Image (tube, rainbow, N blue to C red):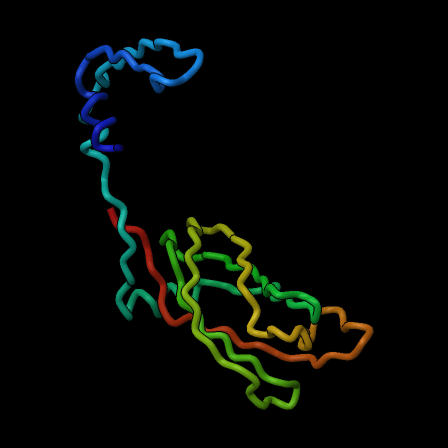
Length: 167
């Protein structure tokens, strides 16, 4: 259907549309489609792709990306944090390794997540991800403790990869 509309948008034609023949009050509608003024703009737009940066650039960029403000309450299904891009590049996506541990340092859980978020140079974005804690019994150590118990945890976040838009 989209290809038909694209074809029709190129040709200056008039179409006569009718409703179904058994409709009680069939109406005729005349639609006139005009050809676009400039098709060059549609064709010549750059195609944006996501490209992982090489390891040398990753080391430089990941040292300039700050992750702060982690939040997870015991009653929440989501975890949230802020990512600040202090590098000289725009960021299109990140892959993060999140390691959860109890307050004695024993690992509770570890996971890697791709995060698709556009962060221009020197800007900050808030990111929310689905929590690994499906029972809603854990809370981040700096969050407000729940009234009915729950276990506090600490987290470390490592940047595994960074992707930047290419033109």
